[in-house]
Image (cartoon, rainbow, N blue to C red; front, side, top):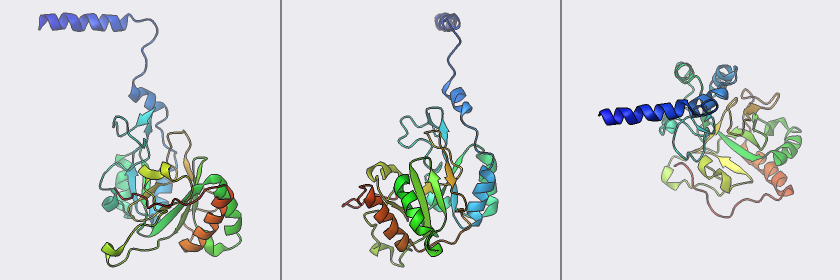
Amino acid sequence: MAGMNKVSGWLRRRTDSASGPARPTRAARGRRDALPDPRRDELTRAAAKAGFPVAPAAHPDGFGCSCERIGCPIPGLHPISLAWQTQATTDPQQVDHWLRTHPLANFVTATGRDHDVLDVPAEAGHVALERLGADSATLGPVAASGEERLLFFTATRGTPADEDEWWPCELDCHPETADEHPGIRWHCRGSYVLLPPARLPSGHVVRWLPGLGPDLPLPDPLPVLDILTDACAQFGYEPEAEPVAWGR
């Protein structure tokens, strides 16, 4: 035991005598960029009030993820709990509880219950916005996910009474497979998207476009999909030919 104490003391002296200030720990580095948008609580409550079931999510922490999973494949982009699909709620008391107990958390909304999300490259999304804006029936809430993607919120295509007869379409997407789908991603049952003002690993945030917040009515997804498909085709984005894994 005495030998171990001597070794420990020697290591401490070596550390203390090293030239230059000590490097900040991962946690200390993370605190520099861990402060959420001051409107987080207000925007999260507004989304829940609009009928979007929400659940707390991880947030970027330094160069990693607040979940502290080594090699987290989607740092700051996933729910905190594996039971997020059943936990997601619009109940104001539960939402307030999460906001208090997870003061740094991002929030996600579970898709496929009351709404779906069509997720497209920003360049195609902005082209589609011009066409969608000409018909108020096809333009609902729209959020920008950083500088790269636009999220078009629509009514859900629904869940059939017999779940065994339901199959995902080729556009269905789960965040863990998102990189496999550079064009249109259809987030429906079993998926989720980050809600404003979530922080992204890139340093950007998710934000509602001006005048296109969660209080707008949700449009039918098929007319929106048609316009988004045409816009994506202009930039060479084509739907994948194979079904996509989802809901893991």
